Length: 250
Image (cartoon, rainbow, N blue to C red; front, side, top):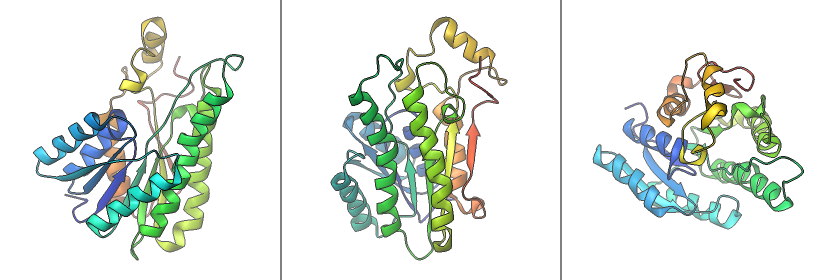
C-alpha cells in the first residue's frame, strides 16, 4: 500500500493505459478520481474494479481541453477528499495521417487535448497540492523522439509534453512538486486496435527486443513508482516503457 492516504487524478482513465494506471494506483491504496470525456460506462467499470478490490474510486466527467471542466474536476476532488497528491495526465487524441491529408481541425484537436489539456491540469494541480508537494506524471510516447510515418502532429504533441515535463520540473521543484513523463512503446489499447494489424504489426514486434506489444499493465507499475515516495529524488525524467524499442521498432 505505497499510496495509502494519497488522492490521485488520472485523466482519460476509462480505458487503455489510463485505466490500467488508475487500477494500479487504487490497488496501492490511493483514492482514485477516474476522469473520462465520453465513456461513462468505461469509467464506471474501472471504478467498480478498484472498489471490488477494497479500494476507493470515483468517476468524474471532464473535457480536459476546457479550462472550466478541468477546474471543476479538481474542485470535486478536493471538496470530496481534501487534497490532491498525484496527477496522471493521460487523456489524448491521435490522428495518423500524411501531412497532405491532415486537416487544421485534426491538428488543433490533438494539440488542444494532448498539450493544452496537460497544461490546464497541471495549472490546477499546483493550486491543489498540499504543503508536501505532489507528483505529476505525464504520459508521452516513444514517438516523441522516434516518430513513424503519418505521425507528425501526434509526435509533435508528445515532444511538447516531454519539453514541458523538464521545464516544469525545474520550475516546480522548489515547491516539492515532481514532474516526470512515461514514454510507452507500442501498446495494445482500444485506441490502437487495428493499427498494429498485418505486416506492420509483425515488423513492430520484430523490432521489440522483448518480443511482443506492450499492455497497459506493463506501463502502470512505472506510474505507481513515480507516484510513490520511492521516487522522491526523481524529477524531470522521461522514462521509456517500450520493451527495449529504439527507433520506430522496425
